[in-house]
Every structure is written in structure tokens, then in C-alpha cells.
Amino acid sequence: AQTVTQSQPEMSVQEAETVTLSCTYDTSESDYYLFWYKQPPSRQMILVIRQEAYKQQNATENRFSVNFQKAAKSFSLKISDSQLGDAAMYFCAYGGATNKLIFGTGTLLAVQP
Amino acid sequence: IAGITQAPTSQILAAGRRMTLRCTQDMRHNAMYWYRQDLGLGLRLIHYSNTAGTTGKGEVPDGYSVSRANTDDFPLTLASAVPSQTSVYFCASSPGEAFFGQGTRLTVV
Image (cartoon, rainbow over the protein chains, first blue to last red):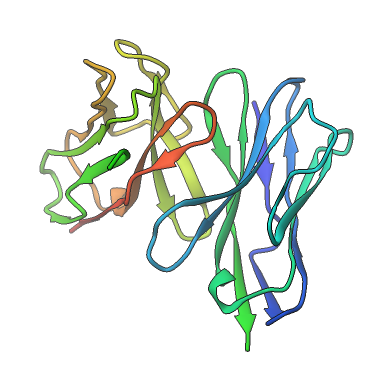
């Protein structure tokens, strides 16, 4: 069975600085997707970025980028130029052949002004 | 506006009562899911459906049932609620990445 591990329950970053959130996963599948979701205090789940496993190029969405290391089964999220609005819970998720999306336990990010 | 609608948004329920959480999507996605979110545990999959007429068990299915009579609706039923089912419940649909409803906060007392 697939698993997703987020080993950082909480992180903190200064406004305008860069922070990296870690995620590792375990799977025997070769074709899958990985995602990062943001959940602000409003409870809404917002897709931040997605990565297809067959793509070697790391996905980027404005200030958000990933470091996808397929052999190491690692999928970290880098947030550049952090803003107060980035403060939220961040979830890493795996989607494979069964269509089930498996989530990690989340990392709560605080942004200090 | 296309998306997923959950109802109710919050509910306080007496233990032992039956409750159905409603979920409707208008995006014609085949796959739908129910998750519960608990502090420190992230989102855990309760049940899922890959297409209308089929359902499957997720990580924490006990005490819950689902049905998928059509593409748009995916209700979650608690047959006899217990306090450990106090949680925030999310419905989602997916063509790949998941689109989420706004969640239902359920408190079982």
C-alpha cells in the first residue's frame, strides 16, 4: 500500500524568505501523480502544485516549486518570497493507478512579519 | 459555478442517531471520495467511488457507508453515530487532482 510521510508537523519562516516543506512517499507503482495542497484557516482545500511522475522537470507555479526526486521517493515544496497569506496547513498527496488519493499528516506553516 | 457542494456545513448530532452527509458535484468527474480530517492525522480516506455504481473502502471505513447511484451524488451515511466520529468531513471529486467541497464539521455528543 502507498504511504505519504510529512515529518515536519510545524514550520516557521520570515516574510520574504524561502522555506522548504518535506514529503516522502512509498509506492511500487511507476506511474503516479504527486500534489501539494494548501488549507488556510477557512478550511478550504486549495491545489498548489502537481507533478507527474513520468516528467523529470520539476513543476513550478509562480513562487511555488517542487524538488521531485523519484529514486529517493521525495517530493519537497519550496515557497519563495514567503507572504503572510502563505500561512496555512500544507498537505502532500499521492495519486496512483487505483485513483485513491493518499494524504500526509500535514505541515503547519507560520509566516512571521 | 462548477464545483462540489456539501451539506450541512456543520452539525451537532446525538450519539446513536443516523446521519447522512450530502455531496453533489457538477463537474462530471468519475471518481469521488470521502475523507475525514483530524488534528495530527491529516486526511484519511473513508470510502471512494471510481465510477457510478461502484464503491470501495478506504483506510477508515468502519461505521460509515456510501452509495453512488449516479455520477453527481455521493452521500456518506453514519448508521449509528459515536463520539469518535467527531471530525471534519470532506467530499472530493477527481479527474486527476482532487477538487474539494467546503467540508462538514460534525460533532457527536
